[in-house]
Length: 341
Image (tube, rainbow, N blue to C red; front, side, top):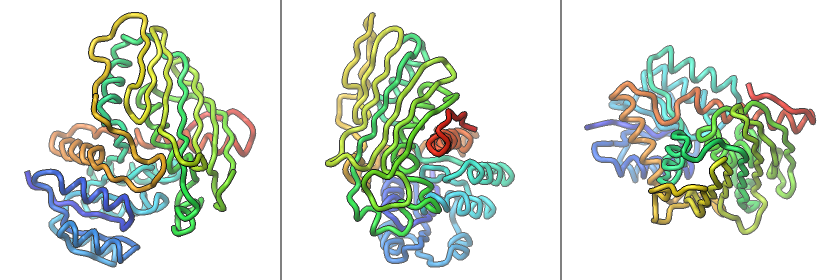
C-alpha cells in the first residue's frame, strides 16, 4: 500500500494528524499548508513533505490523494470543498463545520466530485467504546433508559487569549459545546441513536470570550431514553469525562473511555474490552499527545476508499452532532425545547 497525504492546518491537531499518519506503513505526508506558517513549516519538516504558504499551490501538489483538514472549525467546509474539487478525498477534524448549512455544502461537494468524506471522531475507536457499542446493538443490556454525560474540563485563559479563532462564533462556532463537548455528543448519537429534542442553557461563566464556556442540556432520544449533558472548560484542574448509562438490564459507567463499573442483572462475558490505560488526555490540556485514535480513523478511512465502504464517521453522520449543538444554542436563546434539524 502506498498513499500520499496532504495536511491542511498548522495547529496542534495538524501535528497530531501528521504523527498519526506517519505511524501507518505505506503512508507518505507529501505536502503541508497552514495559516500559521511557522508551525506548518515545522510539521512539513517533521513529516518530510513540502511546505506551502498558499492554499492553491498546496492543492496543485502531486502526488496527493487524501487531505487531512485541521484548520479552524469555521473553515472546514471551505477547505474541504476546495480539496474535493481538486479530486482529493477529505478527512476533516471535528466538527465537520460549525453550522449544518456548511456541513451540507461540504457533503454535497464530496458527493458531486465522487470523493470520500470522513470526520475525526476518534473516541469511537476506544476498545471499551467499541465493545459497548456491540453490546448495545446486541440488546444484551436491554433498553436504554437514562444517560448522563459530564465533560468537566479546564482550559486556562491563554488557551483562548493566544488564539485568533478559539472562543469566537465566526471560527470556533461556539465554545465548550461545539469545541470540546461535541466529541461526547457524537458518542451519545453513535451509541443510542437520534436525539429528537433538546432543552439547554449555555453561559459564559469564567473566560473572557464571546462564546459559552459552560452549558447544560437535557435530551430526549428517539428510542424513548432520556439524557442529561454538561460541558465546561472552567472546572479546574480538569476532570475525566464520565458517562453513566442505565439500561433495563443494569448500569454501565464509562470514565476516560474505559468501562469503570458494570452492574448488570445477568453476567455479560467479555464486558471489559481493555485493561490498558487509554484516556483522552484532554481534560486539562488541548494538546493531544496520543495518536492511536487518530491513526485508527486514518486507517479506517483508507480502507473505506479502497473497499468502497462508508467510513467510521462520514459527513451525514458528523452533521448530526452539529445539529444537536446548534439546537442547544437555540434553546438557550429562546428558552424553548428544540428539535435538532
